[in-house]
Image 1 (cartoon, rainbow, N blue to C red):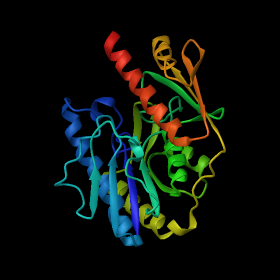
Image 2: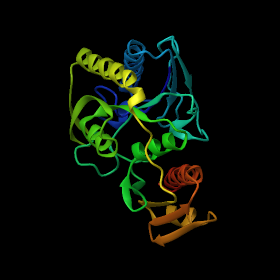
Image 3: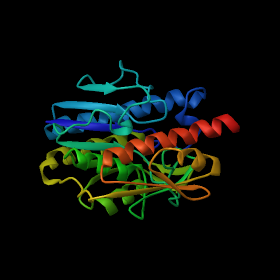
Length: 276
């Protein structure tokens, strides 16, 4: 049985501050090792549950932070940026289930490091009129390929977001969000045990899960922090600017929708870096 792991950084045990998430700060190296150890706990639990093959896709920022000498020997991994399929690169129908280590969507009260792709520059995302974050968009990507989400790892607000979308999903809650940059964390060994046990259950139950039902068509709206970002995105064929800071894109092809999202959020990053 093959299990896919999309491994973002903000859901890691003990991580509460953006400085822990990026190279150049002394806390990053500690957080990076905890990130890999949390990934390994998923794999250990997955092996106990019957999985024999794992693919880890780095899903945070530059996506090149893995230390392979520390990663579980049963796992292969994908590193680098930009990936065509971003946080779900490498997923295909051969996987029995997908695991997401992540965080709550932008604007979630108490969600630790909550954001949607770009913390300061993407204010909100809506799919067919409903507020969504990275979790839902990635879950629909799994659905496109026939792969269900079976486990999420992160804080309690991320777990609540997942349960609202997929009530039967397993969730490994390693911290309780108190604010965007504050959490009450489980003791480290307790957190690892929670991850292992829920990963084991998720893999054992993999056959019980079904992918989300895909709508027949998709309307993605993105609210940006700056009108200039919306202006640039509106130059892409098919993108409609619906207000000063908001763009809309419609398609029956979810892959096109996700690729449009990747382009627009990267434009947001480039615009802000170029002017501020």
